[in-house]
Image (tube, rainbow, N blue to C red; front, side, top):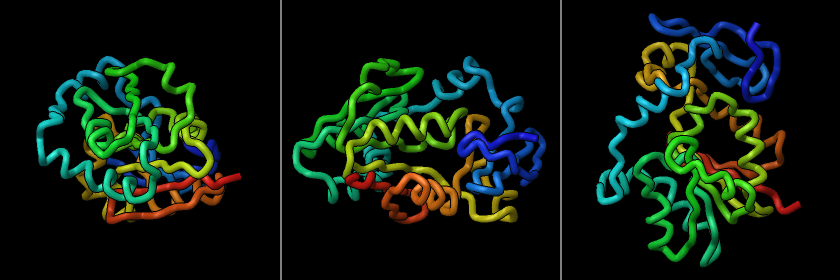
Length: 213
């Protein structure tokens, strides 16, 4: 029996099997996840990330990030403060926010491991193509809630599970560093449990607002 790494529920069932890994699904929050013993170790994981070539001058990459940057810019106050969590080796989103008049700190477990930025609270935070990599999503999710002030925004980008049939042919699951897979139902569960306002924008952008209380 594998307990859910997000909501810690013990009712999980087999969801899919491919040549490399098996996948379980939580019957409460609907998270699909790779069992712990089938994940990469830290050294292999970082070696995979080192292959990423994210360049702040790459207009295509900026266009990709704008899918979450633009809706956040529409919702935050002038001169807001933010944190880009999991910014990777070529942080770019913070530059886009700075160009729009906002300040933004960086955190990444491998490339910007300055944990002091995690002791503050911000008007907004972002995690683009991050949440699917989390080995302890439940722990990190609570961390994210603490990083955002009441009324603040959490902006996420991740591809979402549709159903078992689509998952079987889904290229996204084949990345060995992708270990947890959220669906709309998973985010709806979290929003209801944690009293967050939830918006889906397109297929892979999720905005959550921390309520004022």
